[in-house]
Image (cartoon, rainbow, N blue to C red):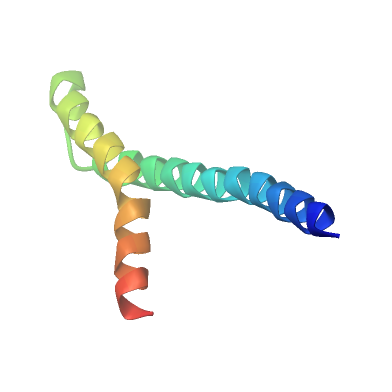
Length: 75
């Protein structure tokens, strides 16, 4: 009986990890698209937009983690 509980727990943990990672990546991609969309109207020329887009990509990578930390502090 103990083996079944361990197996169930291990199986549940294995299926939960990709789900959170998938959710995080999905949020980051949506944020990146939004960042590029917003920034594209605020810059002129490829040289100006390049740096702005790079900042948007970095922000979209960090942003989901900041929400996780923020929400964990509230709960």
